Image (cartoon, rainbow, N blue to C red):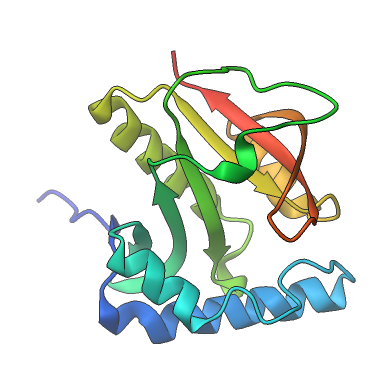
Length: 175
């Protein structure tokens, strides 16, 4: 008898919000302990994830029915990516997917779950004829940088958020 698929990457539902926020709170605590100033100012908050879901951009990864990861996937660009410093994007004018708010259940870290979500985004991109994925992260967020590099992303330079905070920009080409 064939084993039932244990992974499901799907759009987030309203009922996923509590699970998402528990993972986010664990990530914020991890950043605090590691002295990474990312996500220490109240962002992202519950409203951030409600906004993502209402826009149809919030996704979760389920393992055997339990939410173990989440990310937002936007296909409409990111104004923070319009200018990059100390480098350049791999693609200048290609449409791209932007992945944001990547979170994995702290008890599940090290299992490649973020990479599983990235591969699902690759499938989504290819179905849409989109051949680039971009992301940014804090300079001190070494675990995210490691995940991005492990999953084929290249460090492209520095971007600045609307509030002036610096982030490292990454891109993965799919062609």
